Length: 289
Image (cartoon, rainbow, N blue to C red; front, side, top):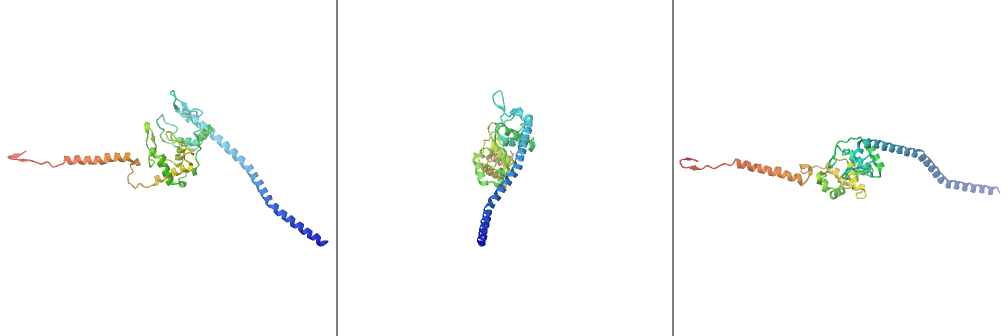
């Protein structure tokens, strides 16, 4: 009888330990999930509320800046102002997004110094923080392209060869094969791209400023845009094997150089030779003529 009871206790103890081992894994997992959820509930709401408050502060500060520097052309609420002829004195900004603001204001094109055919690049009037606040306010008017993250326009991550093919297909008609810019009808021009930051090139492709077409992410993916930027940055660093580049404007500058310098030098030599040619003297009887 004693032997039977000892055997029963051993079997019961073995079964109990087996059950404990089977329950140990789920129990540890449950405790870990509870701890993770508790920490998330403790910190995440505070971070979300802080971000929301910061966004609201940026929108309020951006509106104050907008009313002072932008509303005279774009309207108090970004609705735009129409002229008597029905044209836009300042276009509406609803839906243009923070990326358009970052490009236009970050390159100094806005605010305009005066009415012109095309907004030229000039000294930036706002700080980076103020540009961010203006962008936050315009973004609040309607959904639009956001300011890209740094990895989206990092030229080191792009494909130079593929970017060159995209650029030659879509951009050289206006910007020249080397990104040196060019003239357009109506007194407008395509600006040069050699001294433009990678972020502003990405934003220009994304938003289509002025007469430039919009290359949205559905037309050119972010990877395509990054490849184009890589090609342009490679062009900036490439040595000029041909010597004097003459602005890399192609046949325009080269033809002008050929006419003014090449043919001009030849005409000069022809005039000099004609002026210094020896003249024959005819001897006549009884004297000289």
